[in-house]
Length: 335
Ligand code: ASP
Image 1 (cartoon, protein in one colour):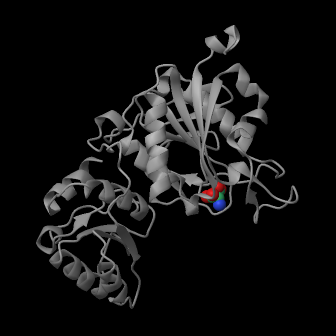
Image 2 (tube, helix red, strand yellow):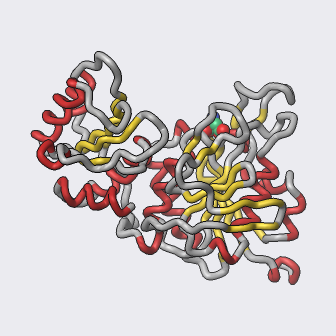
Image 3 (spheres, protein in one colour):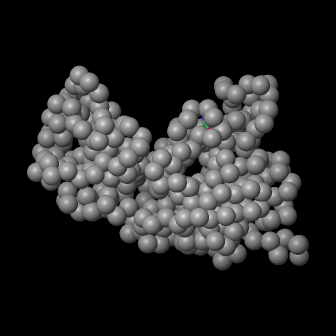
């Protein structure tokens, strides 16, 4: 039963999935080779000030490093977030997550969550046991953002290192620095300092209730899509292997402006010839791969400003129903 103080505070559902934010190393100076060990409740206990801004309900969906999250877990996270958001007494959802694949989960949720309530994904670059661990303040900031009325209707948000970033644009850009998330072209939506949240921008791309993607309650699988990396002297064998494995789509992490090496061009022809979707993204990390006049005749799609891992997220959702090349390009233009 909640006490009267708790009843005045917004209820935040805190969903734990693991990651460095929930990890412990043997020494406070050990910043790698740590182990995910802390339950999501204990992350809150470690930040007593959180009790003054929200009341919490908890769910531990998993407690693993984010590079181990598979389709079943991704779908489970999405189903559970939708379930929490559908409860009237829940004001917002905060998800603790490893930073390695945080952007993939955040963008997936951004497309399939059916609520305008705030959803915030947060992680940390240093384990909870580290000197100057960044997790506690990141978590405090995530909750501050989650209970901020202005956060509603902005799609899924990523909060790291004092910034509020749209899931559509957040990407991990540093292997170890606490300032790991970069927003190369679009900038952050706002900043957070303690309880003070200040927004400067709003995301314009379709998300959450304005996204057409919807998971069936029983949705247990997603279409297989591979990302293939292009480089000088690439061969066609990886494209052949992907097609033999039965992928429904291939995202090329292409050179430069989504250029295709001779092998990637052959791979695209092979894929399209078999009815497999082929999306050109870039391995560069900044800028858009805009549609080219050569795309439609070849049957390939330009990823626009989605990096390869996010282009894969969108393509998998797009392939849940039959779409031709032009319909796919339209999605990449709009989302
Ligand atoms: N290895 C971690 C992960 O689970 C990295 C992190 O959380 O910062 O993604």
